[in-house]
Length: 618
Image (cartoon, rainbow, N blue to C red; front, side):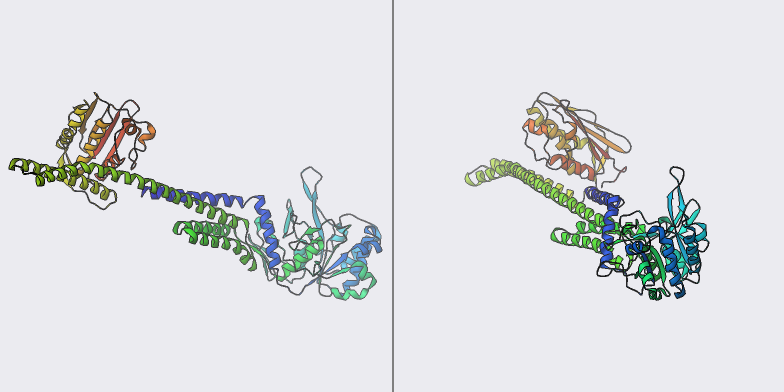
């Protein structure tokens, strides 16, 4: 369970790291560029629905400037054009020219008279640098023209290479102004009052999703361009209207946008999502069409973007947690497809959803989850193969150990059948066979019991047994081995207390520690056994004067099939499972085992076990 929790925690940490990296990447400038390109592609694939256009552009083109006297005579030519369309009663006239300076007095007077006759006149203003460094100010039309205006709107565009949005609101200090297109829209409505909320503007019957946090920016729903790439909004130049006054009829009941379209004079040419260059007056007219149609593109809330990205990360994690092989990769591919398609499907429903953030979250978490699970499975495979090989070695060792009693049994039985032995000899041989059979049975039973115990397939016995008596029995069994190596077995006082559990398994654990201490100690050294007890637990220690272990080995000695350096140095045979079995036995009895050791200073194994009545066996 502990390993599962660590693995699950590592997997979740990997997914969380992938999600955070991808989400933070979605807030970078590069992500904004990718989102912009994706927006343009989706805009072309799913343009706004085409409706009857309600605007006309009165264009100041190259021919008009050339034939009507250039920029110096522009105000007179503009006055003439406005005089000719005034009888047709257009809904509003929006002039995309910042008339901030006086010009020829006669032309200014004539233009003022034309403005006075223009219904719902909207004049333009722009933000420019102020007189003091680092300040800004409004560049506004002169008062001679301004007093005839229904409103003064700003012509400040978003500072992007591609004009996708229009800020409806701009302010210099406390002087706030609405966009030219928005003021033109208000001029066409009976109720032009603006009701403001943090998330939207309401004017007339329209609700415009323009958040205060984004300077009331709205996406411009550009009408689909004509086959030649030009704006579908009708253009009539000053020169055309001058040459053919009958064209004035085309301005009837329209919103007129007046502006420069000449390439040599228009300084506000910007790219649109269609990939075509468009002048400022055409952009304002397109923005008006978008606002009046009410066909808005509404940005998705930030919380929705984060939630969707989190859902993608969770889906990627679940796929590679519950599925493996080709199924996992197919489902992971589906997560990627969903991440790529969702922004477009939402865009078709008129919701602008960022493309980069969910896409990067999907790719990075799918790659992270797949990589993590690949390496986890690979590590499990390597570990399983290693343990399998070591387990086979342990089985070989156990079978080797069994050869001794089996050989004795086999030899004794052959003596009894081949030779005519007297009763006394037969009795001795029978006792030997019986003794070796019991030894073999105990060996097999102990090995199987420990394996069942480690797999949770066996319950411990719960019977009281004395600690001192059990330890003394183990010491006596180990003494012949110690005497052969001239090792002294030194007994310190043993606690006269009682434990509750499985005596046979605890004897195995005690004897294993004594046996290891003798095996890994050089000749003519001392192995000390002792302990003490309090009201809650008993402490049993086995200390040797062997070669000891370093810090790295101390963290691995209880790992199954691990063979220490002291085992290799001493040349002693071992399965590498003895200490693992001891740890499992002690743990299942509710105790712990601690090791203190250092190279050249020997080792001390200490068992801490709960006393009978103080702690129940697990």
